[in-house]
Length: 226
Image (cartoon, rainbow, N blue to C red; front, top):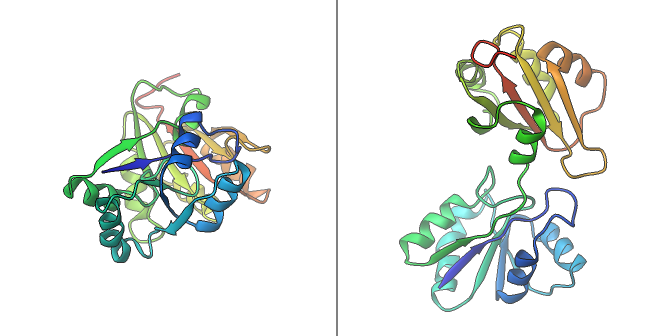
């Protein structure tokens, strides 16, 4: 009994490993965040598999049934819409319940927006703190204040329609000389890494329509001098 965790491309469809493709071909069923997104990927690589939805709105309802399927002999893979399952995507609950049921977990290495953004930023990579997504409303200011006190390079994910508001809030919390890097559309045609102060980033993204998944990186000048 085994559940394979298979990373999928975060943009460029070529960013998938040969091992991931072989695994998706060999398993009996695939659990995915959005069946339409996953079927587009499978179609591109001429893979025909049964796909079943597993996302934030149904995970508690479906996880027991899906675990039973694996226990009954179905080989399975879990994927998210993009990147590695469990990293700011559904997966933790499924993995926990599989382990509790004695099901082996095998996680394949592969695409994630986190590491390319970190390495491309030019900020220290030896130590970093990843926060995932910020709270949408309640607790957001408190979370940003906590992040402003971190000594390591800080990373968090943000959605395009909340980016400007978040940057505006950050300029009132972080040191004025704080350097940030805003990475978006990683691996896609319009990939961008904007490096500068919070004020410069706010001006840049206020003047344009923001699209794509975003990683915000922070280098605190108090702890990480140039």
